[in-house]
Image 1: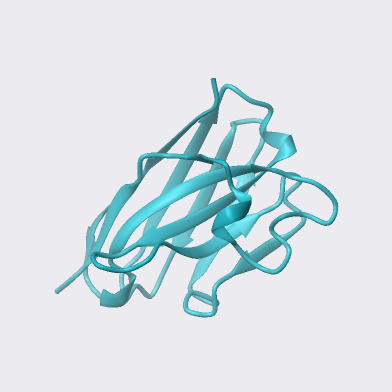
Image 2: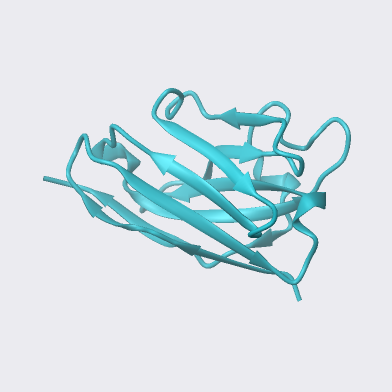
Length: 129
């Protein structure tokens, strides 16, 4: 059974950093692109970043470019999202999701919610002074 578990959320001051992890199990992660999405109260879930199954393709929403970095370690079945220079508007529940990858990667053009079939339960990130 495919399972995704997010961890690493918490509360941080503006300008601070957090590292989120997405641990995958129950499937061969090399065949799946992984996306990170977030949802703030009262707002739609939006794409933050994604990485292809091979790790060769990455994409970021404009709101996080230059501040967030996505990476993956397929041997450890883990995808990491390093978040820096955090802002109050980054406050949200962050979700990772898996989608069967292909060529060109589903990550091409950025993280699009409809391309990902399986989702984790989310981890809360709060940026506040």
